[in-house]
Length: 132
Image 1 (tube, rainbow, N blue to C red):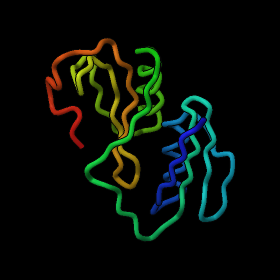
Image 2 (cartoon, rainbow, N blue to C red):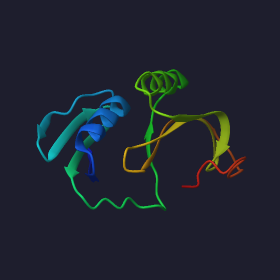
Image 3 (tube, rainbow, N blue to C red):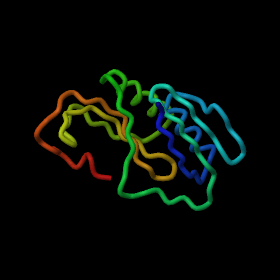
C-alpha cells in the first residue's frame, strides 16, 4: 500500500529539486507540467502539477516518519547541503511524544517534517512544535 499525494507547484523545477532532496529520490516521470515520484521508503506516490494558482493549506503540515535519529540526521545533512533552511528539534516533546525532527518548507510554503519518535508521553507539547 502507498499513499498518493497530488500537490500543485508554482515552479515545477524548484519543486522537483526540493522533493528530490526531501525524499532522497528522483522523479520516475517528468513532463513540462508534471512530475511523479514513486518511493518505497516512504511508500509514496507524489504527483506535482504545475499551476499558476497554488494555495497550500495553512492549517496543515506533512511528515515523514523514520525509524531512527540517524535517518533524521541524514535528512538534516541532505537538506542543508541543498541550501534549504531547516529548523531542528532534538528530543523535544510534541504531540504526546518525545521526538527528534527537522522542519523544512517546500517552495510553495508547505511545512514538512522528517521525524522519529523516541517515546510516547502524557504531555502534548513543550514548545509550539506541532502548530502549522
